[in-house]
Length: 496
Image: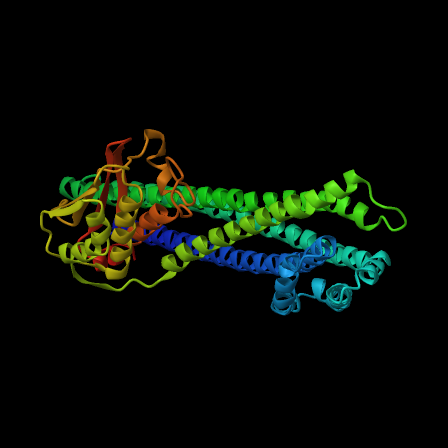
């Protein structure tokens, strides 16, 4: 009786400690997740602020570029950038006010910036109007007052200050987000160690209590072995998830930084290109030299358009990367809707969406095996096969008709296995795991896209309790192997 009471007290103590520990780990983890979410929201907001700032700056610069080109060439076609900038400026300014207005650290200078922008646009409009009337000498005289130059310098000073302030804030937010991710990793590892320690204590108490009871001892050992195996599986899942968070944070900061570096570099080129233009325009009392004229024309016709094109390209690249991240984030938060699905019928429908592309090249698709119905989320499964089939079409081997082969079969009592094989370009050994990372692509980069297709596939299938791997030989084709549980609702129950 005393031994049973001591066992009961020890068991209750271990149980209480375990519950408190789990509650603490879950609570702190949820708090860290919420912190990461708030950092992500702030990062997205700052990206919008930065985009709005650059939008106004590039628009005013485009207007000035069109005006200068028209005055230099006296050709109306050079007014296209000016006319477009004048049309775009109200929307760009509205976006700037909406993004900067709620932020006191920017709002205090908005009125001053507005006056400078209005003054600059008025000066540009006056000079263009005079030139359209054929009064080019008066237009040049207006430029010679340097009023427009002072306004433009003031606009750049304010907007560049905004950009520097925004970049500083972005760096701080990203550093905090990475710190929160590191904390989550250590909490997970520490929690796993603590759980194993508590389990070890519980096992010791149990063995002490059933030392003399052979049959009970065997049952406890078997139960403990199964429990420890499940704990190890969950620990490995948590470690893998943390490693993916670290890789994701590195990829995001690295890939988003590249367009920013390009933008800053070509802004410097813009400033350099303005020097010969300034020398040309400022030559008031004497005729500019042939070198000044040649360099000014070179800046207007080549340097400035090239720099603007690269800046716009980098901005579009950044926007595409951010949209890709948001897409995967939204799909990860979507509530799954388990239902009974005939996998073969679903795959046939997905194949039909690319059938015309296969037929154009003389290709074909075959489906073998049978699985019957499984309980899973239809939308996720359609997205998975849609991405795999689109990739197969996109990366088929030139000059060789594409052949798709989909093999279905059970995989143990609770899983199914689906192998999608193509005879496309294939994937090199060094890239087989890399292709599942966000923004990472393998082989020749001759197809459009941001490198999120296979990362999206892996994210979706893991949300369904499954996984995806690839076997491939360069130049011969690839086989993507998908494993899925037969009943998604049982996966939910087993993880609760």
